[in-house]
Length: 183
Image 1 (cartoon, rainbow, N blue to C red):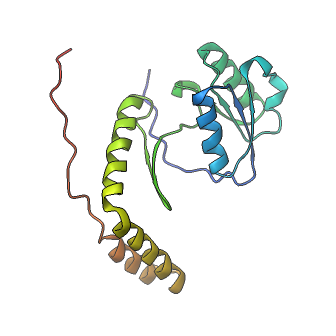
Image 2 (image 1 turned 90 degrees about the horizontal axis):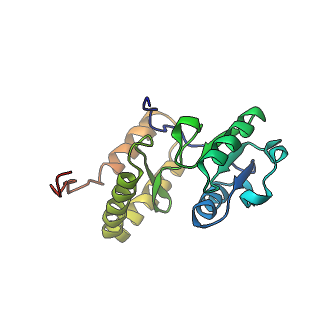
């Protein structure tokens, strides 16, 4: 399978209708993330799913636990003009749910183009640890950036000033890979 490029856009879903098909922790997490992004989410168990539910929605996330059904639902979504997501199947999905690191209002998305979701999760955990260690200092920097952004008129000078302030943040470590077991 050819690799798809890593997701490189964020969707602003404010009020747009979304459908999540499936129940259980994975489907619940997808529905929760879509709600946090502002979508008007309807979640239905796979057993209650009907093709016509894809009509009039902006995005359909299939997380039924059945790969074939998720592929089918993705096809129905596209036929209805919606963006489609089939869990763990980037070859039939229009979007991905990357691993997210959050320290409000900062969010960092980690994606591997579907190649290694477990690695994306692990990188997320390490980044969470690093952001937590930065703690209040990072919160104060974000607040300062927000104040400066509001106080300065838009333009190149503001962008440069904000970037100089943001450069106070640095990652003072590195990622390492234990040799582990040979496979």
